[in-house]
Image (cartoon, rainbow, N blue to C red):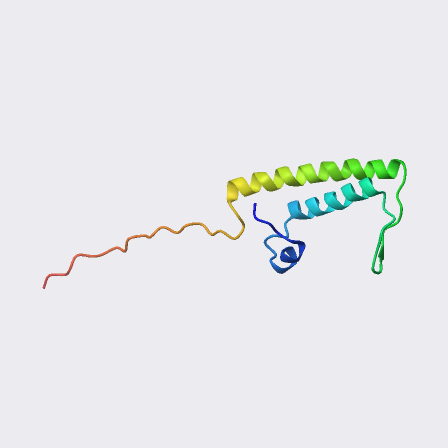
Length: 101
């Protein structure tokens, strides 16, 4: 699968599919479970998560990433990449025999 950035997902709606959303959410929960939160990036503050909530976020993140990967892998193998178009076969034009006068 080609590299797809989050910016490309917003630019091209074909990439912003439910499986991509599940992958992004799973990744966020997975990182939250590993780090435990407490990070601050510019104006965004991620609160600290401890105990059972941290474990729940970690396990949910793993499950969502696996589920999103499986669904995304299954659809990409059966349909090809979202940008590819089905091949069109040339249909021969019907020709009528010349009219005899």
